[in-house]
Length: 45
Image 1: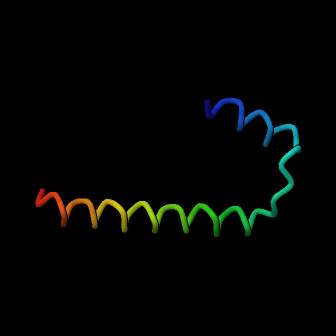
Image 2: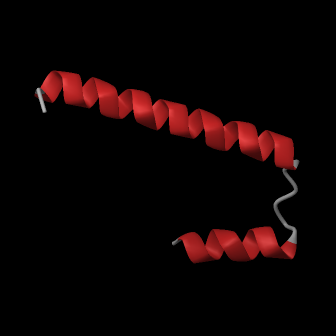
């Protein structure tokens, strides 16, 4: 699935500024970490 997205980026179809992309990636990482922490707290693992 990821390969298709990479091709789109390579072709320049996706014209998101690098800064905006970095921010989105960072937000996704933070949300993922928070989700894992919450799941770990609930599950007790």
